[in-house]
Length: 271
Image 1 (tube, helix red, strand yellow):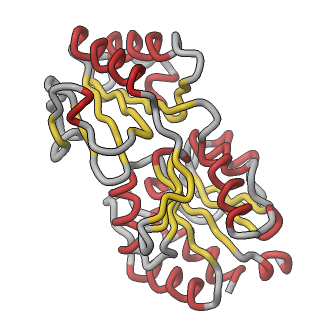
Image 2 (image 1 turned 135 degrees about the vertical axis):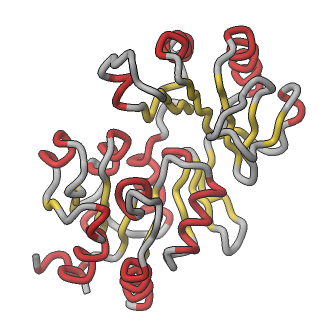
């Protein structure tokens, strides 16, 4: 554990990792992260969620002012409104995707740095609050990630097959019930972005930007989109509630997200 005293940067997932099952970040976790930041350790929230949501959670957790959002498609310094890295999906592809989802009545939302958009037929709990767009010209800024969401297994399979026809797009996060072909579930989803993104590549880019090395980095994760994080840091920590395959690749397994697993590990081994 002595090598953990040399950690200079931590990358922390949100859902199932930083937050508990009630979507709360506890005071204990906030205080621990605040303590780590005060000692000069970067605490970077690294999520598949939208930039707006990730920034909100970073501020709530008292983490550092740089976030990785949209599964690595965006690295953003919110104190200075600076996009350190951005990989935007082309207007041509967005138009094709919008046309496809509207014809097939599939729920779809599109993430940009400052806003989340939805197509006209995308009415559900996830897209609540998103800006309705009539066409691609209504979008302000660049789209970095597109999320597909449905309670219809066959519709999401059709959307997945459609995205796989694009050579330069990839699915970088997907619900387990869609992977496992569970056809009687209540909700299915997957995220897509340009190829070559992912949390892992974003971590490599940020380490280079901050002039830090892989050996100085640690990450905490629980789900399928955290595998790439594990490849880009020197120390890998899986949550007690995480996927078994992820645990097998971890250097350490901490407590669950409902037991403040991230804060427990940081306080015990890094501070």
